[in-house]
Structures are given as C-alpha cells and as structure tokens.
Length: 88
Image 1 (cartoon, rainbow, N blue to C red):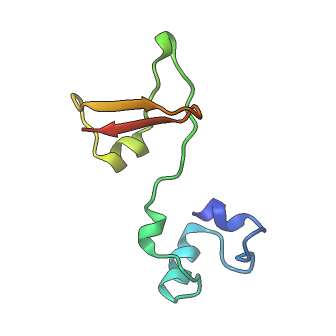
Image 2 (image 1 turned 180 degrees about the vertical axis):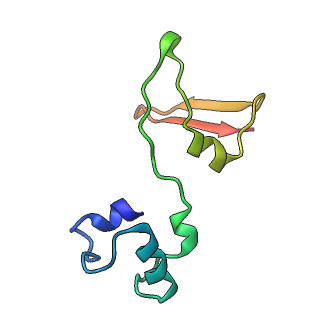
Image 3 (image 1 turned 60 degrees about the vertical axis):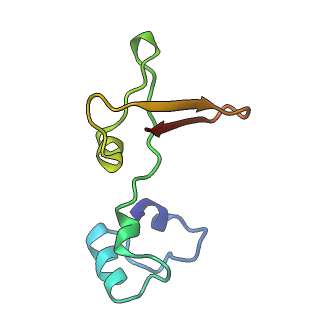
C-alpha cells in the first residue's frame, strides 16, 4: 500500500508515505477509501522457479493463506497463461 501511494498517477501525492504516517492518516480519515485492513493485504510477489521447476511460496503468502505442511491444492492454467492455485 505504501508503494502504491508513492506513485503520482492516482491523486494521493500529498498524503504521507511512510507506514507509520500512513496509519495515522488512515485513523484520521485523510486517505479516502483506505482502511487498516487494506494495509494487511498481501501484494503480488515475484518469485523465480527453482531446481526441478519448483515454485517457492514466500512466507508472507503462506502466512496470509494460513498454509501448513501437508495442505492440498487445486492448480489450473487458464488459456491466457494465468496460473490459479487454490487451497482445498
């Protein structure tokens, strides 16, 4: 969220950009449409395939999804090349 607010193309350039001042601004209602919960949303994270084409899941993603050893998944590749991974 902090990185998003640093860009100049959405009109929030005048708002604070450090995480602490963003929380303070959210609490004061200075950033329209943004809540503290929005700040807890995990952004897309870039990963690189490893040996044997394994794809690592970053810790922030594992925590967000509540993943543990032994979880099962369904995986799908859409026609546009997008890969969808769902915990079951």
